[in-house]
Image 1 (cartoon, helix red, strand yellow):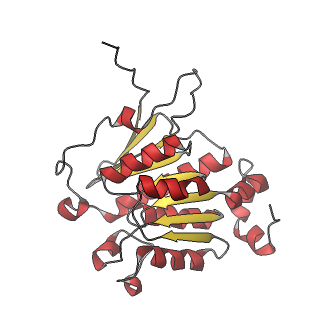
Image 2 (spheres, one colour; image 1 turned 90 degrees about the horizontal axis):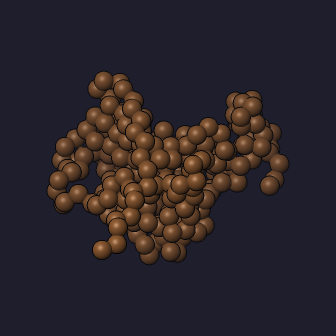
Length: 255
């Protein structure tokens, strides 16, 4: 790894001061490659804080364009980027924030075909998508390629996130749970309304997206305890956080 430039030392000085991070941890951040699904409500704050933290390479997967209705919560975009591809708008915002970060843009949807072609180039996957097809595809692809997955979701005034590493075992020697241990099946179409139908408070996506970035930083640097086997729930109206533990489901007995 190349030594830090004087600019990088100054930029990351507050990280380097932390004994838990230090220069070695910052080098790990610089070497890391993180793929983020979606440059929207969750992806926007996650991308900004990961870029500010000095992640060496950020991949952005999104096939949408910036619209005026996005700007209430998708803070990586602005009024001047309306109509642009979200990956382009996000990449330019990242470049303004931290020119040391390399950005890879993918103007397409994340699915099994995309994962087969690109996921192997990244160390961590962050899923900020807004639909269950993508969430299940991300979980399956990350598990198959043994890539840690940080996945989050938001509703009108509440959100959740967890970290998935089902290819490893916990302290008790049991396999870590996967996405289907938490959500065995996709809900029926139309049961969970999209934010375009139900509405969403913008700052909520900032809370959950920033927490997703924090989990990725913990995974990369090795500090703290990532949310593996734990689902963090946030109720914005009561300002309350709760954590639910979940485990690998036992296989059904053979007939």
